[in-house]
Length: 141
Image (cartoon, rainbow, N blue to C red):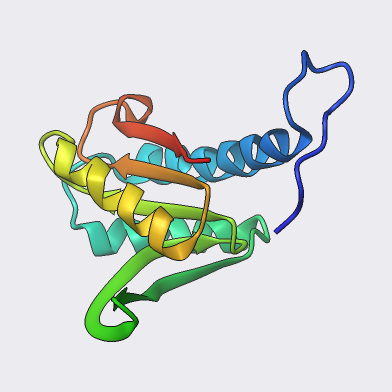
């Protein structure tokens, strides 16, 4: 992982955070384009494949359905958790198609981020009229 450094002229914001903001914004732009084309009402798997196509169009590196191992007291468990999309090994995307995002969805992405040691995550619910209202960004230290 890169080490944080001050970004001059940006009100003390860490350069590292700016890089992730840029990556998050690119992914959000791709998700908005998918939602603009398809609208709400499809299955999560359809949005996942379309978002993957959009990310590929913009040459944003990603992996789909990444295994997330769970260790308990030193023993690796076969729990078969999966990250929907891992962007450039730096950003976790958890997709949903639900009536509304719940606290359990937030807990899920935060746990995935902690287990994967990834600081930034986006929780995206495609089942909304305007996608901006279905996006939550998470940052852990």
